[in-house]
Length: 138
Image 1: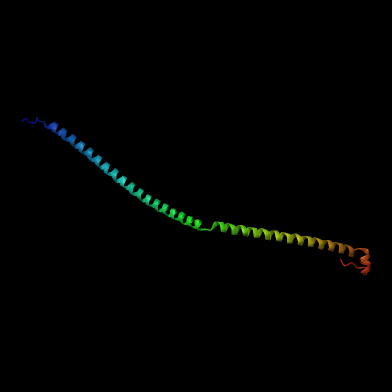
Image 2 (image 1 turned 60 degrees about the vertical axis):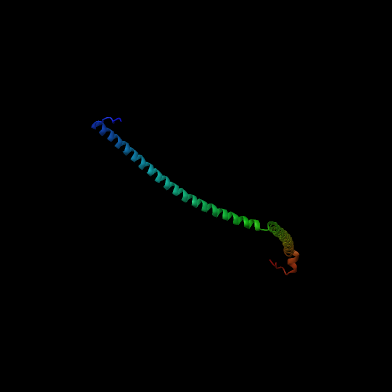
C-alpha cells in the first residue's frame, strides 16, 4: 500500500485558499443563475398575463364578428334592396310630378303677369282715361 505524499503546510494553505476562491466563484455563479431564473419566471408570468388579455380580446372580437355575421346573414337583402329601389322610384316619380306642377304654375303666373301688364297699359291709354272721367286708377 502506498502512502500519500506529504504536503507542506504552505501548499495545503494555498490549496485551501484556491478551493475557497473556487467555492466563492461557484457560489456567485449559482446566485447569478438563481437571479436569472427568477427574472425569467417574472417575465414569463407577465407574458402569460398579456397572453390571457390578448386571448380575451380576440375572443371578444370573434364573438362580435360572429354576431355581426349572423345579423348580416339573417337579413333578407334582396327584398330589402327591392323595397329601397321602389321607394327611390316613387320619390323620383313624385319629384317629376311636383316639377310639372311647378312649371304649370310658373306658366300661369307668367300669363297673369302678361294679362296684368296688358290691362294696365290699356287703362293707362288716353281713351281709357277719358272714359273714366279723366282720372287714372294708378
